[in-house]
Every structure is written in structure tokens, then in C-alpha cells.
Image 1 (cartoon, rainbow, N blue to C red):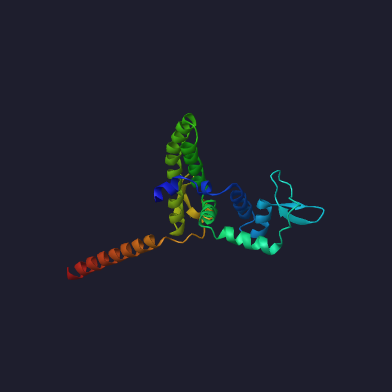
Image 2 (image 1 turned 30 degrees about the vertical axis):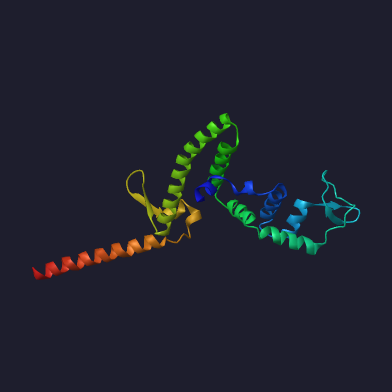
Length: 205
């Protein structure tokens, strides 16, 4: 089931108005949910300056009572409490590469055969490219975190050295992963042990 969830976008679980609500809510920076609800579900009447249920043609349905702000707050909160709504909000926070792969996968699964075949080819091709790009990004983050340096030969002889984070400014404050720190500590301990053994051997001789 978890593999299926990764292949199919959570947006397929949302009704049309729920989808509009989530997009507006995320566009607001995940703030002002009542306003996102009003824009997704209701229609504004300029004459009365009130929000009404939306008619089929998109106009305010004036034969019904207006919706007060407290009701909008409650309805918006009820929407945000839904698991499928939260799942799609989380999906929209994913990286551009992940979203691109998801879109291609959706096209492959839910369109006609010819488009599905083209999308499948794109998915396989992009998985390779984006996977390599993700690996490079991870490598750059770790190297910047541990203070790696770049040595560049200078014409005429000599060389200049600068920190790798100058090439990747987005990782200038990167912290080394715990696994890297542990591995570094283990390597330093092993090196120290080797030095102690060597020093003891020299003292004996």
C-alpha cells in the first residue's frame, strides 16, 4: 500500500472545491484558512458585502443566508483536520524534482496508452537524471558541512584554495549528518590508536 501511495498523487483523493481550497491555503503561506475557504466555496456579493454559498454559475446564491466568519473558520478547520487534505498539503512542500516525477507518474497511470508510454519513458529517464542530481546535492551538503576545500591551479604555477561552500552558498550553514560525525570520530580514534601503537613500537626499539 505504501508503494501505491507514493505512485499516486494525494490530490486524487480531493474533491474539486477541496483542491481549490488547498491551493489557495498553500498560496497564502498556510495562513488564513477561513479566507481560503471563502474563496474556494463561496461567492462574494458586492451589494451586501457578504459571502454567500456559490451557485452553479459561480455567482452568490442570494436566496440563501450569508455565511458568517465563524462558520468559515469552523468549516476551514474541519477541512484541515482531514487526513487526505493534510497529505496533499505535505505533498506540495516536496522538491520540484519529486513533484515532476509525481506528475509524470500520474500521466502514465491515468491517461491513454500513447501518452502513458511517453510518460513512462520520461519517468525512467528522469529518475536517472534526478537521482544523480539528488546524489550530487547530498554530496555537496555533506562536503560543505565537513569544511571541504577546493584546490584550483593558478596559471604560471601555484594554486589557490577556497571553501567548497563558496560554490554551494545554500549549504553554507549545513550541519554534518550524525552518521558522518560518528564515522569521523571512529576514523580519528582508529588513527589515534595506530599512532599510539607506532609510538610504542618506536619506544621499544
